[in-house]
Image 1: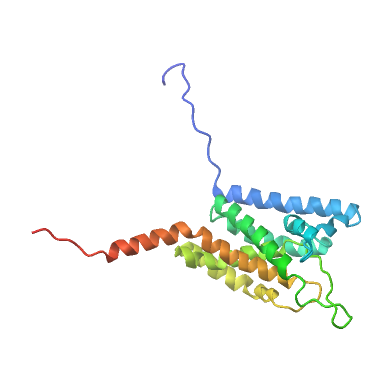
Image 2: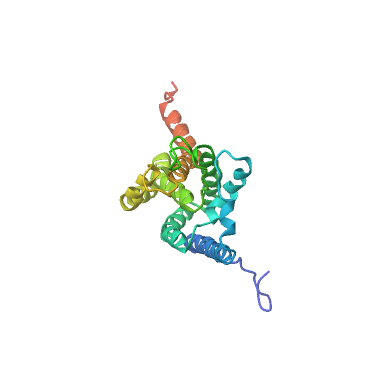
Length: 226
């Protein structure tokens, strides 16, 4: 009821998607810096909770590895890509961002647990070193791969444009999925990127199904009455 003496309640104003996405990614980055501060003050004891391939207790590292970094330089190197790519991910929708991140985090981490020792050798001939994989770069590579291919699965123009721009700007980074620099987890990069493609395919399901339904409807013969 409205009129003199009565106030009509109004629905709370919804925040723009870019604001929610920006706050979400900034909060995640702040969390990474807080964890690194705690890690530094504890003589980097937290770093032992990374992914240790093919070790049972190393499975727990799947949960913690993206939150841990070997030093401040490592974290700083991951900060800008995480901010940019993470923010672009949120523009696809917060629910998709959350589910895609979960898929990349878990599936990419599990892949790293399976293959993380491949190609890593000790100075001693024939001996394979045990490795400990930490850092948000696997997650970043997953976001990167997701953004590049998602538009081609959905056939949405603006998402295709985002994918092309991301490929143009960050495409060279994908070389990080190849063995090369000692001490860099190319296995984590590769598994993260593969998980990102899988996440993009799974989460583009509604658009792909709608496209197939439309295609089937267009292919049905037209019926004319007499």
